[in-house]
Length: 91
Image (cartoon, rainbow, N blue to C red; front, top):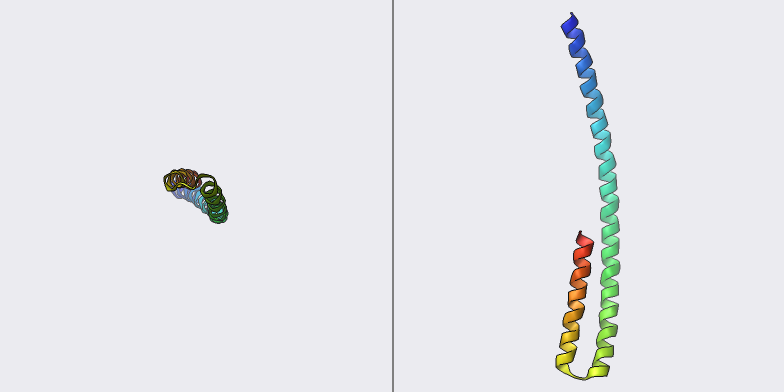
């Protein structure tokens, strides 16, 4: 009879732990969904800003330089900066 009582106590503890783990999983899923939503929103903003910055810088550099090689170097630098921003967002 004592063994049955001990087994019942251990089962109660396991059920409580399982319930607690399920609650923690739900909480973490909610956090992850919120973070994913934030990442999506920030990614859209970054794309919009990248487009605007690239267009403005390209127009400015073309007007200033007028040289195709220099414009190409500037574009490469802009693309490199965009890549760095995207890597930062993905971390």
